[in-house]
Each structure stands twice: as structure tokens, then as C-alpha cells.
Image 1 (cartoon, rainbow, N blue to C red):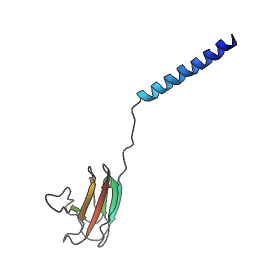
Image 2 (image 1 turned 90 degrees about the horizontal axis):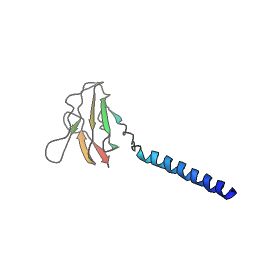
Image 3 (image 1 turned 45 degrees about the vertical axis):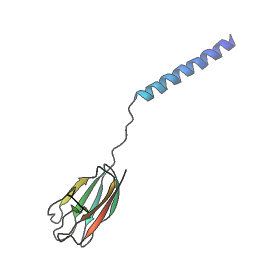
Image 4 (image 1 turned 135 degrees about the horizontal axis):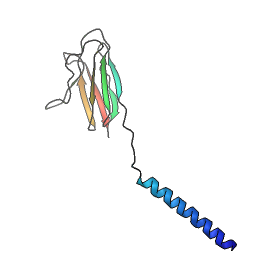
Length: 119
């Protein structure tokens, strides 16, 4: 009889554990969304940053003069263009694909930075 109680207890633990594992497996895996990153444009500086695919980069003109944020591709059309940013204005872009993106932040295109997007 003592052996029966032990087997019954073990069986109860196995059933309980199996139910717990089944309940855990039926729940969807939730991956938190990646937060964005904010960078400031000041003077003659276009910050270079690294982000993950799907992350948003927000640029803010922290200078006393007008700036822009524009993709500067080697060929073809650019992915993003903020237009004119006045002091205090911001522009955001979400990078969907891995890669390296050169951008300019001065109207004459002389000042550039790089956004590196990892998978």
C-alpha cells in the first residue's frame, strides 16, 4: 500500500507538470518591440549610430540653424528625407532592413553620418 501512494504521488506530479508545460506551450511567444533611439544634430555633426532592423531613429535639430536628414544612397532614390528642420524640429524613420545607410544632415550635403542596421 505504501508503494501505491508513492506511485500515485509521482503520477500526480507528472500529470501536474505535463499540464503546466502544455499551458506554457499554448501561450504565444511575445518579443518586446525594440525601442528607438534619439540623436541630436548640432553644428557640423551627423551622428553615426547602430540600431536593429525595425528600430526607429529620431533626429532632433539641436542647433541654432536649419538642418535636414536625407539618405545619401550610392545610386537610386533615397529611403528618407526630412525636408528642412528648424531648430527644435524632429524627424523619425524606422529602418526595416539590415544594412549601412549614409545620410547627410547639412543642406549642402557636406556633413554626413552612417546608420548601421543589424538584423
